[in-house]
Amino acid sequence: MDSILEKINKNMDYDDLYEIPRNLFLNKKISSLHSKNMNIALLNVPCGGFGDVIICKTFYDYLTNWYKNANVYICTNDIGKFKTIKANVKNMINLKEKRDDDCHSFYNLSIKTSIKFDIMIVVPVAKRTFFIEELQSMIPYASKFNTFTTSEYNNDILGPYTFSTGIGKHNQGIFLTDINVKKHNLVKSPYALIYIQPPGPESTGSWGVHGNYCFLSFIEMISKKYNHKLFQVIVPDWIVDIIRCYLVEPQSGTCYTVNKRLKEYTKNYPNLLMMDEHKEKYVIKSGNKSDNTMIIRGDILPKPRPEFISLIKYSVDDVLLTGDQSITDAFSCCSNKIIWYQIAPWKKDFALQMSKHIPNKYFKTYKTSCGTIDAINYNPDYRKFLKKFDFRIEGKRIMDSIVLSIHYKDNELLQEYSNIVNTSRSVNSVINKLKKYNMSKNQIGSGPSSMEDKIDALRLFDKHIHERDLGNTELSKLNYNGAIKLIGKLELADVLVDRGIEKLKNKNSSAIYDFKQALILDPEYTLAQEYIDTIIRNKKRATNKLYFTHQTNEKLPDDILEYISKNVDKYTK
Image (cartoon, rainbow, N blue to C red; front, side, top):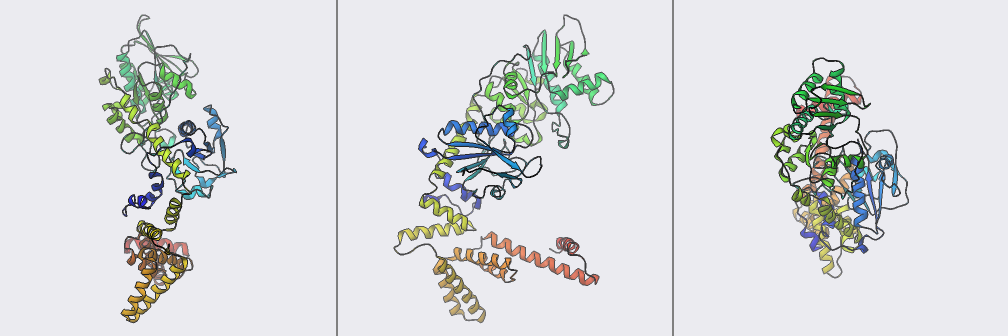
């Protein structure tokens, strides 16, 4: 227990205590014996496109490669998306949806399987903070000791996470893979690739607040940098729509502005054409037949991931992308590329950290992250960056420690530690119990507090309060010392809080006294303080209800009284 006690700081968050078993095994040697027949479940609830699915599939590939004799499963409510990306669905378990929803919580899902999982990993946590209680509604034996979480890149908002993916700070890297890319026959070289999101509010499904600016900045840069007789530029359909809207029906506004700038920024290409998704051609501007020609191609995207990666690989040096997965694929397949990045509103930190660690000063702001004519001679070297932020290095180290901690979970010390953490309410209480456990191992005939000890200590403590109120100081002190001698201050505080909670369930108004006494015994017992605050607040609201009813001289419905009392409460604190 000494090694565990050394890792506990009384100022740490209670949730940090659940990390200690795996932290004991960090950097320890692991063998195939430790993962043999272990059941590992990756819990995936996709929210949006295919990014969440690909992240989970990549993590699955990592695990099956790292622990070849373990059983790895993907549990998801959208097996169809995994089929679309050509994933093997043999080891997939369906999560049944209880009702329709865009982004399900585990409360809304159910699972039917005879497999008992040793390790569960939520991959990734998206849209909402993960709470263990929601998973327990689906898998009752899930706990903070056997369940772990994975973030999206540089997303600290919904954490903390076991696996904080992304760049910089405490993050463990990006999901790089070894990709074998087959050359496509979709378009002839030379061509450039643009894959970004459209402008517009998030409520419409768009989030590229600077989509038009991003597109035009990249076009201006590549038009000056590359001098080809025929140069094609692959774009998503929304860019075609904006260009076409002015060509079909000329009028002022965004479509006009985009077309005007497009003509200005492509002076090296007097012939500028566009092909839409139906392969219909449009002339944006025309010069002589002998002049350079640029064709904007809206008839190629979207494509399945293998073909999309191939489009990245065989494009010109500069490529413009957005999204975690697209930029990860580019780093994985084509580290010789000059990668430009459209920054999503919630990905500012990811871009900022890339700007520091690549380094790439142009990623600091959306005004230059999509490309700029000032960067025509920019030539990055990603080798150190990719070596430092390859998730397969730090992620493997953490995963090894998890596997080892689960393999040894039946060890007496780890079992006792888990029991203590699961039955305590404060870090101080855990420390006290661990110390007492240590003493019990070093003293013949002694042991952890029994239920009888707790009952006797509570009885003595109640006598202490009674004698104190009567003014019998000596008797009060004797009973108090007897209670403390039996189980210690912190454990007695735990017992008082437990009794207070039971009293609250039975609407016993004396519960507040137990919480107050617990707080005297352990001044850092935040849970006791929270219960005291809640009781006081509820009493105040009840008083407000009575006062208002008296003043109006009529009985109002409870829901109206509750609303009024809450508002009165704001001004009477």
